[in-house]
Image (cartoon, rainbow, N blue to C red; front, side):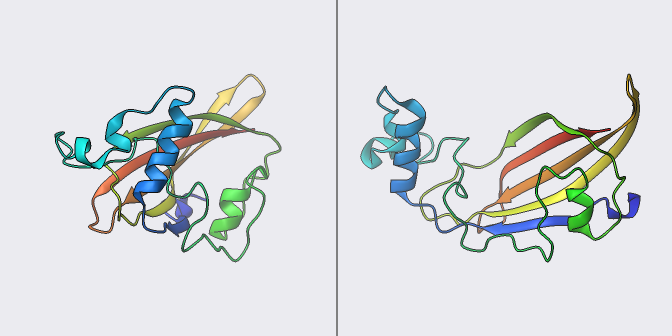
Amino acid sequence: MAAAVGGVLAVRVSYPVSASDIRRWAIAVYFPDRPPRQYWDAAYAATLPTGGIVAPEEFNPFAWMAAVPEAPAIKPSSTHPDSVEIRLGVPGPGLTFQLNAGMESEYGVWMRPGDVITSVTSLKHYRETAGRLGLMLITTLEDRWTNQAGELVQLAQSTSIRY
């Protein structure tokens, strides 16, 4: 399993982000209030330091559909305790239970209308620790989003605990 660290689990490419996508996302996020103008008013947004309409940081260009969806040869349920290893083609630890241990996100450049976002999800690391129920395997995945210029848009790390 240690040799699988760094392995890519999925690659997705978004359709070009549109101003309408950004506007609809902002409407949904800020509902029932009106969303901030920088997400829907191009003339106003042009006067801001961002220089135009930008997406809220939490905007997900893959929320509806991806232009190039992930297509692993084996697509196990993400709730299967060995799903990470199955996707990477290595034997898993064979543990029975899995729970979400949290997620961290770091943001880079703003997403803008016209951007095409590429997501690459990989296995960042394993850590073993003792718990009340015995040994636990802490697994961290990294999802790196970049725009068409290769600039970092978002770096998210999600951690799971298996025992």
